[in-house]
Length: 241
Image (cartoon, rainbow, N blue to C red):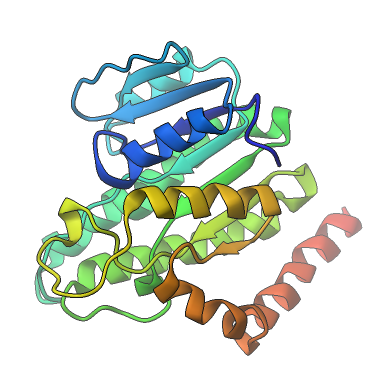
C-alpha cells in the first residue's frame, strides 16, 4: 500500500510519535490527514484536518465519524504510560480504557469506511506487548491486550481485504519515556519505519534498532506460526458459511 494519495486518521497527534506521523504522512504525499488531538491544534498544511478527539469519549468518536467521509488508513497511536504496580486496579483500568478499548472503539467506528476502501488498521503497540516491562505493568498489560486484539482483527478482517498491522517499537525519545534512562529512538525515525512497514505489508513492524533485533526470530518463531494456524480456523468457518 502506497501512502501517496491516501486519507489517513491518526490519534494522539499533539506531540511525540503522533506529531511525527502526521509530518511523515504529508511528506509521503498523503491526500488528507485527520489529526486526532485532545488539545486544540493548528497546522499550516491544508491537507491536515485537526479532530478534537478523546478516544475514551464515545461522543468524540461519533463526532469524528460524522466528519470523516472516507478513510484508507487508521493509525491507533494514542496511549498513556503511568508508573504504577499491579496492586492498583484503577491504574490498570485507565490504561485499558485508552490503549485497549480506545483502539477497539476507534476500529469499530471506522471499520465501515476501511472496509469500503480495503484499507489498513495500524495499531501502535510496544515490545512490552511481547514481554512485560515490570516498571510500568499497567502499560504492559494494556499493550499485550491490544496486541491480541490486533491479531484477532487481522484474521477476522482478512476476508474483507482490510490489513491489520502491529507496530512494536522499543523506547522512543518522547515525554512518555523521559524517566527511562535507556537508549531511545527518535519519533521521526520510528514514523518513517512505520510507514515503510505498512507500504511493505508487514504484519508486525519493528521500527527501531532495539525492536528490529527481535524481528527475524519473531517472524520465524513458534508463536507467529501458531497465529497463522489459528487464523486458518476463521477462513474455514467463513468457507462453511
